[in-house]
Length: 446
Image 1 (cartoon, one colour):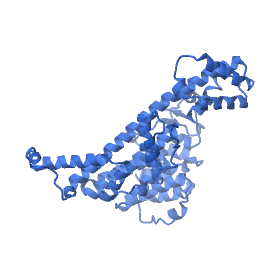
Image 2 (cartoon, rainbow, N blue to C red):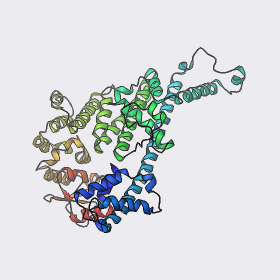
Image 3 (tube, helix red, strand yellow):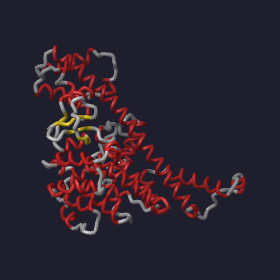
Image 4 (tube, rainbow, N blue to C red):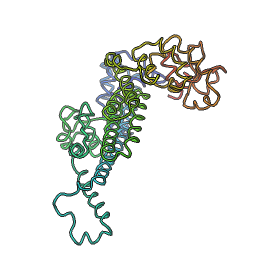
């Protein structure tokens, strides 16, 4: 699919504008779908292949003056696809490798926190081996290392069975599609060791139906698969390590909870709604202060709302009468009481219930930013900030004017002296377009 998208990007513009009909473009798409990137990477031109292509092109009324440039475009796109596949395979292999290290570290952490788990009733070392250790702790660390090595030689299913028995982490409680998650590890294996072609091992270990399974068929790693896999590995790795720390060492529980809160908030900022939903749902299962729990609830509702899941009844049931003012504001925003929220923003900022950056970046205010009065209210709030606070707004990368329909990226020459700093995403949420200068700069860089 990624190669086909690249084809359509290459054909209609610039020197490659061949003015193809819809039928001829469909012909080009079919040709590209059949083109093997392994073969097309050969820089030598095969004249027989060109002649065969010209014959097929003639059937679609493509004259040679159009067919020959098209042939080279198809080769170019296919080679580009091969380079993309190599990069995607390397990124996936690196991510899976990091996840494997994490599992081994969790196992090591467990045995250090629960050394009695090493007892099996069998002899661990001979007398000669014991005499070679300088201390009991050295012997213990050697035994732990052996246990960890033994665990890592097991299958992916074996790892998660061990985590469930010893740490209380259940993969099925975190991942909606366990088979799809397990397949990531098998796809990484054939990408590294078998040129992304399905092997016997893949057929045996990859769950049926999770991906194409015909022996020798190519299983690619496109951009969406890579993004989804990285998100899944991050989610499972973060939750597994958090559960391990909370259950094995309460000393670092608060620090781990803070990390989970940061990661879930960042996933909201990145508009990764599924990841944010799962991370916040995990947080809701843990013991914490009421204010922290409510913030997890709010962020969970934000993610679910953007995934078109119903949340109104749950939000309505939240009693905010005795809570911090920011949660009363959050409830109103989630119930789409935009005018009420806009009227309360200035007071919320002045009383430090929230800050200016949160107003610009928190997806809670996505719909509020579309309100007719939001831009003017934002300008008023910014004007009320002291100079010290303004100097700390370094994360904001765009500016807007009170009555303008356009925004300017940071450093744009057309930004006015009275411009209000925001994020590019804030301006886009408000329905603003980049100025012509900024739009041209973005087009040139892409």
